[in-house]
Image (cartoon, rainbow, N blue to C red; front, side, top):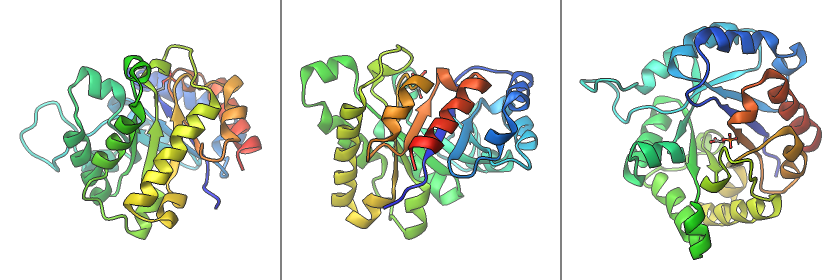
Length: 258
Ligand code: PGA
């Protein structure tokens, strides 16, 4: 079963639109045209339209880091899926642990966002993962599977959705800490998620959905990670901010992940 690898950058609350444009200009031409890896840059809202123009003629795809679960209305400060589509986004990160932790996003909210993203034509990157204390307490696998199940609740996995839904396992203790979850363990968790998707939908659906690992992924870690059978790519924060490092991640994914 071949799944196209994905290298998704999550810039978080970093880069003005000027800095975002400088990033694209500094990317090697070869990276911009790489078509064997889905390259998605999830940028701050204010950089989206600039990147939409800068990505023209390249294979780079644009993502947002959040959206609201209504199509329009009196929701001061929120962003609707239609606005993201108009700004050139194909993807949106949903339920990142920082959203869950600092902005009280629970599984119900995450589920509404996933459902609306799919309905609107955006590809959701649904995030899940345990904290250090949950890992140490044991039994954390059930929490991860429940985040996936509740996040997808009510979603009829029609054939086109299997290529559009992406799930990222990001252990919270590995995010931004430099402590990568080793690839054997990350692969084990992603394997559990795939088995759960097979139970929820079918083995065929589970085989098609892409599963990413996230948490301190760097050029020095990706080679081993991308060779694992269930790791179809990565969601990368810090190491996606520098053009050289992002280009290395794409190149190594292309080299070792196919
Ligand atoms: P990190 O962030 O690569 O800086 O650990 C990953 C993420 O939060 O998506």
